Length: 480
Image (cartoon, rainbow, N blue to C red; front, side):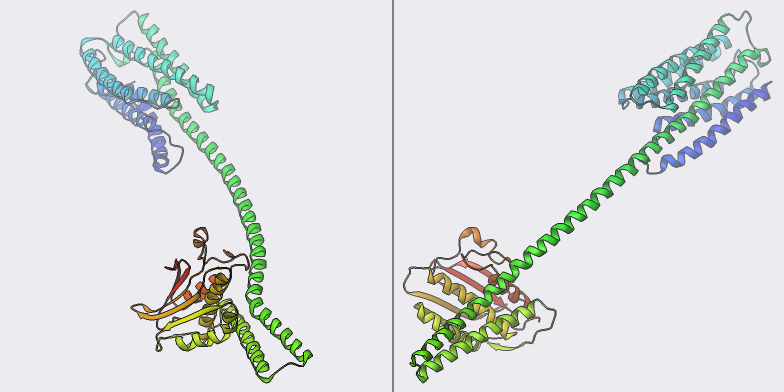
């Protein structure tokens, strides 16, 4: 009899060990849905309880004063039941620290009470005490599962609730059966077969409960994975829509930017071409009137040549910037570069009564691209000419200074015009922005781009005279 009962306990213990091993592996995995620490601890205590019960029954001599290991076994079984109840409670809300402490205290109290009853009372009283305690726990489980099922219907939860009802019924039946029992049980052989069957049935129901908890966990993982697949599909759809929108915006922006950039380049080229057109018209008028002197003819032709060179210089600069071709570099003496620019701009300066003041070290030299540096100076001086044309100040002066500094050389272009409005200064060097009423904002961006290509920097500040001052720093040898 004892061997057969022990075998039942060992078989159930082995089944629960396999369940514990498989579940514990997934519990350690980083899953968004976790089985819950209370249930794992409950299953572990149940395995220990079944094992110690099986060993204890083999060593049992009588049921009136059993060995101490029965106190340990029953305490472990109570711990498994109360931890399982905590797991069900955690499905509805997080268990408080006070509740956990109360459970620990109840386990210690159960251990003490059962140890006293082990030596002071008989088998029937101890069994009724255990069955009563388990009945209360099963009643708690039924309530928690019912609350959970209202908010989250689940087949696994329904089966768990049924098993809790079965557990409650079995323990109530054990209590009634022992209360109605007429004789005292002292040996294992005296145990009624009916009592043995319902006790083993209770252990089987407990094992099924753990299996159904695994089923509930698997159900939650399946639902979570389904939601993730739905969310991933929605996210991919949103990402595709975003890429499509970005592509459309880039295409629209590219079209807009290309048109604006083309207009800006046309504006930059329009200045020398417009001057050329005026000079040609003037030349045609002189020829028609027969009033073309050799000196006037030479002056007009020289101006046409310089305007043509200015337009060609703009085209070369833009070609070098918007292509990956390596540009040519040479030793550039700034004083000579400025004198060549002055010869181009002198007619316009004279016509608008603007003085050009050059204060450049005669030996100020860097290694860079002559055409690009000329374009920078033409743009900066051209901007100053336009600013002074709209100014009522007199005299109108453009000052260009150059000197050696620790970083290389420093060139400044200053005028005594109205300066640049404060709001426009932040975006002064950005492409397609302009503070002037005419133009599309290519000139200063082009200046910054060229200076950056040469390894230098350009900045704006208000001059002491109230006008604009552009300051450039360039290395002696550019990285082109």
